[in-house]
Image (tube, rainbow, N blue to C red; front, side):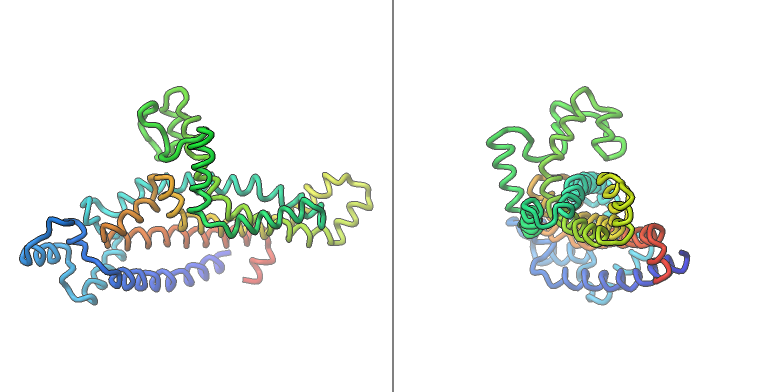
Length: 337
């Protein structure tokens, strides 16, 4: 296991360095000036503009800027926001719990719906439910998030008035100290009566929108894995011994079919963490994605660079943990690697 861990870390380092270089270069290719973006229509004199660029270090050669950028990251300094003058890491970890909470809820929704649906589709192979599920899963996997989010807002919020449109909680009715940053936990620890249910109501639509794509992936993968397992000899032996269909499917087949599904869950969680930008923007969810989308219009280079690298670092660490977990669950993978 130690060798597997060291191999994964060794592969992660060049990936991180390459991403750092690509992020820096791509941001410099985007048209716009951070100083002008901050001043807007008021404008600056050439002298004041040159001084502002000098204060931000943007008048230096690109190679020098990149060297300072790398040196800062090596020392744990991901920069300071041009707009708020706050360290990027401080802003990131203040907003990160909101993104994690949304990601976990979306993943839980996808697991609770996708895996049972995939199991039932495999058991009912070729039947109407199986075909309908595969069509639905493919549709959900291909559906644009922004379109799906707007449809749910129009239906659930504007027409039926069942869920809020945006935000994490109604701060006017339920204001309380945020100890952990996870409002589901904080509403129980510090919130007044009704705060927890309000947080849940705010989570419903973003979780469904963000969880639709992994739901389709989990359903299809579970079905595929179950079909392979159901054809194994030990399943036929279990049936021959007279075991009930429930015990055969859930005790023997599902437990072995979940090995690739667990790997898929970890990969999808990493994708959701990195790809929650659209969902957070649509629902004004105060997370990392919404923060970085706002920073694009402001040309806040340190926030964009630091935010991308911090998200990438979290996803890479999650993948390392996933590889280790997969090795523990399935010894064959550990020996192959």
